[in-house]
Amino acid sequence: MKEFAGCPSSKTVDFREKGTQEEVPAAKVQSQLRQWPIQLHLVSPTAPYYQGADVLLTADCVAYALGNYHADYLKGKSLAIACPKLDEGQNIYVEKIKSWFDDAKINTLTVLIMQVPCCMGLVQLAKQAIESSKRKVPLKAVVVGLKGEILSEDWI
Amino acid sequence: MESYLNTPIKEIISKFPKVGEILEAYEIGCVPCAVGSCLLKDIIQVHNLSEEEEKEVMVRIAKVVYPDRVIPIPKVQRKARIRSKEIKYSPPTKKLVDEHVLIKRWIALIPQLLERLDVDSPEDREILFNGIDFIRSYADKFHHAKEEDILFKYFDESLDIVKAMLEDHTKGRGHVKALAEALDKRDRKGIIEHLNAYRELLTEHIKKEDEILYPWMDRNLSVTQVGELFSKFSEVDEVSGNGITERCRTFVIEVEEKLEKPKKEVRS
Image (cartoon, rainbow over the protein chains, first blue to last red):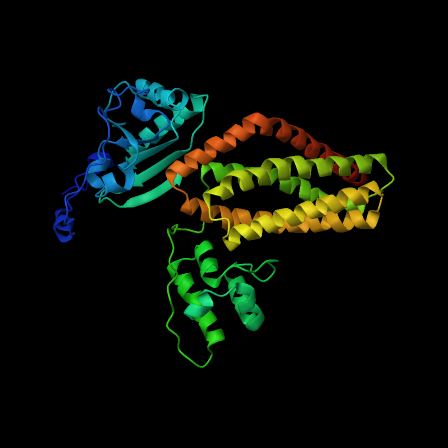
């Protein structure tokens, strides 16, 4: 069979065996979500839960790959989710992120993305927003591997 | 071996000088440190050695301390490890590292300035007056105050690593006071002594902060604390920093040009 040569974001990878080998948590995992809505097109950037908050901008696929997403990243933070590959109207995303910096005066922004190249677009949107904003805040990028491992975690 | 982990490093080095050489091989500069009260376990922790390096260094130290016995090597507990030796600062500590750059530019000019120093020359006296203003306004009031009033408050200030930095700040202030007095008396020897001492102290101090203190602090700060620090530093920059920075940058550029000019004239 011909080797896959398309976009890595849609390459078929099967790691079912890994799923059965890993231990599952004994207790029920508590959700750390503390707001609604969460999709970036639906949220208001000046909603009360964004004011002065540590905000997490998560690529759609991350929460499915990262086993401890709620406890390790979402806990104590406000959230928005987006897909930089499939979502339309990304200029609106840039404006909303900029409004987090300037209007909601958020404390930090952490962008969680998958390792596939197109996901880097979400970090680029955040960088574009911060470059055009009056107020600067620390921006962090976390890259998650397909099997849920943290590949890098860097302040930008 | 456990008991040595809780012993100040100077005590260990004075008893076993070879330990100092071992630490230097791992770029841990405890031998020239003026304080040396850090515990061995803290030194292993703050330098963020890889697991292999930590084991190696502990085995080598154990061989020096207990040459006739095989000693079980205890593991040093730490909060987090980074994957590589490459230093990536958080945005607030990056601000401090960037401020070091301007301080290092002034420090780099000192040997050349002292070489040609004429205490009766109005030009040289003006450079020294402005140099003292640079140290007091920029390096101390602006930069060190950010550390002492903001950054260090996020940590236990009784930790030896923090105490060592504060002691460096105090010593620096002492040299600058003595330098100002010597300049007032046109005491060339005193000026040279204290400006050189300040240069040596700050060179070592900045290296310790850039390579050890700030990376260790970054590993221990939460995301929320990084945001708070950045915001507090930005506030200081806006209220007083930008004016001081501009004045001090202009001073450094002018001295660089003055000291560079005669060189160029000689070359041509």
